[in-house]
Amino acid sequence: MKVTIWNENRHENKNPAVRSVYPEGIHGAIQQFLSKSGVDADTATLDEPEHGLSQQTLDQTDVLVWWGHIAHDEVKEEVVERVYQRVLDGMGLIVLHSGHFSKIFKKLMGTSCDLKWREADEKERLWVVDPSHPIASGIGEYIELPQEEMYGEHFDIPAPDELVFVSWFEGGEVFRSGCTYKRGKGKVFYFRPGHETYPTYHNADVQKVILNAVQWAKPAGSNKPVYGNAKPLEAIGANQN
Image (cartoon, rainbow, N blue to C red; front, side, top):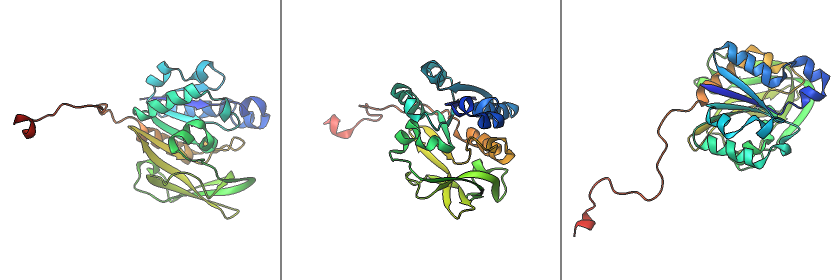
């Protein structure tokens, strides 16, 4: 299995506070723990040619992990369409935190994907609401993060195929924080936590969820369906008269 971690990599280059938390970038931090778990993981960033997502790279990618925030509008439409087609063809997609506003997630969801938010250094508790789901494997009743950005309902997304996590925040809001979807042959998982100024991706439980999600989202390996006009498999009685 080959995983590509995409990150716009802008906060890390502009904000020393972010760079101190993620000296190798958010993409580098995710690559590190995935690689330690035996996953073949590479990275790609916004400012690379074709945003690091050439057709060849995507064709070799089984699961794409996506983190973006301040530069969603800079992602070229042709790259978005390329990723979209790969998801429909079976590539898994893991969308993290502020990636909810990415062009690719909004295209796959067909809604605004808008929400409430607040930065107040508040506690987040992600409750496991589907303990039988493979993405929640190895996680207890909840994951507690001492500081995170708040996301609150209403989250303008389609009803998830499966809801794995629901967050509660110290200020009182709740949020659907772990949502799965199927689009074409591909699987999509949205996972909420991961504000750039907090060490969320160094948390062992968060890492476990992302690793589980990568395994869950990998292509099933089934044959591509055949579409269009089809010849009958059996003789049709009406045609024999």
